[in-house]
Image 1 (cartoon, helix red, strand yellow):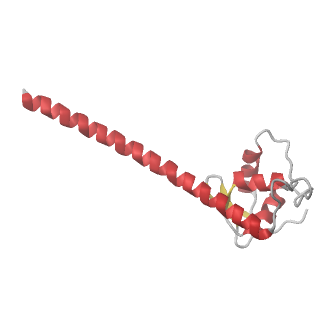
Image 2 (cartoon, one colour):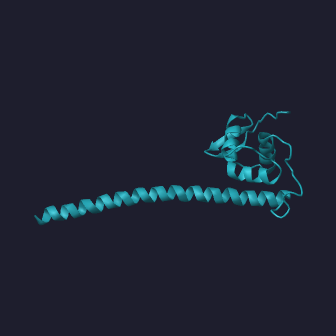
Image 3 (tube, one colour):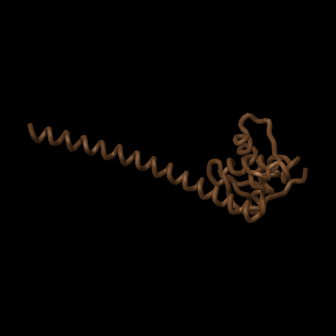
Amino acid sequence: MPDKDLQQVIEGYQKLLERLKAQRAQLDGQISLVEEELKHAQSLESATNDLGYLNSDEIGKKAKYNGMRVADAAYSFLCETGQEMHVRLIWRELSQNGVTSSAKQPIWMLSTLLSQDERFERIKPGVFRVREKAVVTQN
């Protein structure tokens, strides 16, 4: 009987170990995503400082992308930064510099527009960059 009880304890620890490993893998994935988002945010901060973009106190004084179509403004911004970027960060920059949308979920709208535009390449969910040989549309 003691062998059977010991075997149950061992099986219990094995199941617990597998469950914890699965949780660790999930956390590792989440940590990777957050690290990438942080990296993109830091890149945006660096790029905006380097390019002389407006800080939050100056918003409204100048609208860099005012009157541009959303996809054209995104193209212009990504060409200037030369970086791949998440749509949340792209939308933040565009909306702070004159781009408006009546969409209830403008980030989803932006993601859809970029996905359907030949000038952009989807790197991973929500992350886009300008294709190397992008065709500039004139409208």
